Length: 269
Image (cartoon, rainbow, N blue to C red):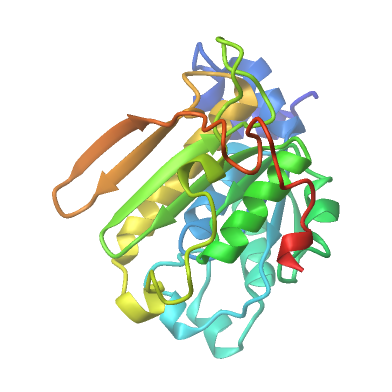
């Protein structure tokens, strides 16, 4: 996919990278990425994906901008909060302002069992920046069932985690890559883990993890560097410490184990 003169100038700092170059930038232009959530994680991720020149970026969110979002959701504005603008509309406007070469597809809806497979079908890679476990499990299962690579992150008050999931593919030893259900087999009971609304969250933390998510998406598109599939990055903001741990495939997990019980999204209906 050829780059225009304007794009060559815009992406000049990418193109001079030996690992990326013109061919890598063309891969970014041809890619289609779905971002679930235009909140704390989605905001920086969407901005960096747009700035990087990812050709088609879908954003799914059913919420509206509010003042309490602006401490961390940097893609939105005070005007958007005052006017109660849909987050998909607010994000799309900012992304187009940043890079008019990017096509933004907005899905102003809540991702659920009735629409997830259809929405995911239009994209190559899924990036999950949602803020609740039911949606996180839904996105994980739908990504596997549709054969899509998933870059998933989650944050707490002062810490976060990030991984890439490719459970539809095999590792070099022939075993499947782990799925999100190898990490957590099922949705935690309501109230076990407080939401950020209840517990609070340091705004800049979401910027760190959301930017890292964008980095992993760009790596998956272009094939540069080492994938996070089979590994997880954990970040403790208060101690400024990163830790990387291996994730193992669990043959008993219900999604891509030896005897899977999840074959569709009916459990979410």
